[in-house]
Image (tube, rainbow, N blue to C red):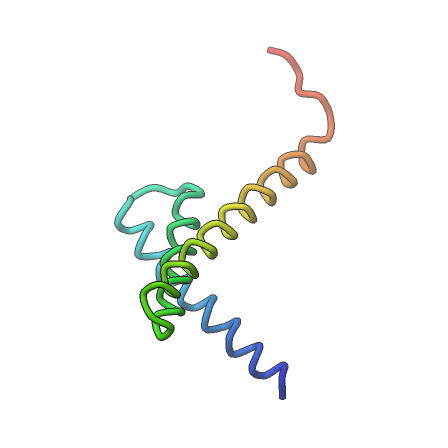
Length: 90
């Protein structure tokens, strides 16, 4: 039942990330990629708290970094994918 364990971990991560994302959007009152990076940082740290403060901080930094890189790569790919032709000059 390895897939079931993986599914539970994935849904725990996604649920925690979504909760932090809503909280960060409410606090910052803006919609930008930094919300996702902050939410990833907080999610990674909170899910690794059982390992101690050092492990939680390392996991928080890693998750924040990975979410930031993923957000950057996806936004660049979408921008290039949807803007196929040259932009008309005004």
